Image 1 (cartoon, rainbow, N blue to C red):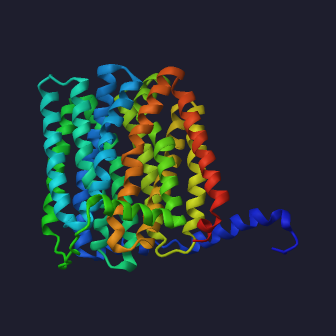
Image 2 (cartoon, helix red, strand yellow; image 1 turned 120 degrees about the vertical axis):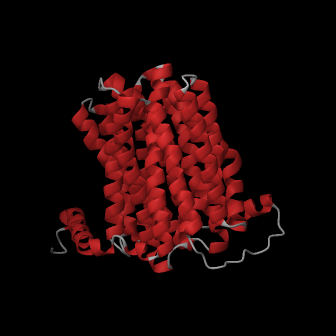
Image 3 (cartoon, rainbow, N blue to C red; image 1 turned 45 degrees about the vertical axis):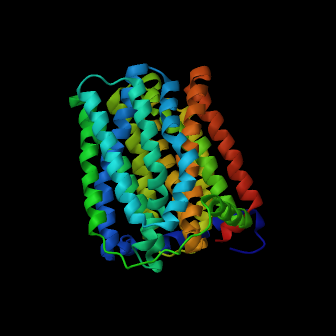
Length: 427
């Protein structure tokens, strides 16, 4: 391409990037982290458990809509599950920097299993009411506030550093395989035998990850004795984040995605019924379409190995994500909904996955739990707040307007990051 053809410089850059991307793509790299026995135990145990979790999430949201016929109440459920993050997640980050992350995970998995048992019992008995789900969502949120920072940092103990990016990508693959399979299975089971069995399967599925955690053999890793207070530890983590522009930017945009982008997924049950004229199966298929896109994206990232254009890929995902959410809101027919949700799912995992990989690389180990707690808070703490806001906006102005408004604000944030932090594109 001649240098003097400046008008074609941007298309040329796109073509050059595409060629580099395809050359780097190698499926022999896809599962390299599974060479580590510990990660393999974690991966397969979590895969089984997360399929159950997504079955419960999908069945629970549709059950709430059946009980209340309210988009607002869908937002309340999401908000209730996220409120504990505001109070406990930063403390959870301090805890996982001080004690065994595996121990924290075992306790949180047991707690989540017991809450699923209670939900299944109430549903089987016919006593279930919307406020029960609200309360159980709140209690689930408390467990997740400790589980999530431990989960994010635990992977670092399971693989060698050269396989860390691949392990993070496979973690996303595991999560998004479950998000593709679980909702579809849940939609069919809900229609055939009811939601209680979805909750029961989820409760049973926790056994797999608990057994896996007990089987993992870790090298002894003494924790530094902490004489400082929890508040001073939190302050140390916050000052560290504020002093690093890249870390600060990644956490900011992750917060924007959770608050303004991903929160629209809480409206999918209402969208399936009110906009597309469907039922619980339609809801499951819509959720699975998003999961399928996310799974594909995670597999592609895993297949790229240690690639050197992550910043450019991150930037593309950040701009495409709100763009396709807007298209989803504008195109009111099933085929378009499935296609746009596939792309939305792919872009979502691209942004979250690469943010995780960047942070794991940039952060020192003694601060890893606290920094990852702030990052984890962006989706467990802010996504429910976004759910509450978009649920009420949908109740007042309709689902279409609410989704477009939130996605447009996210698009503004995307261009702000693109224009003010060009260093990201060079990563």
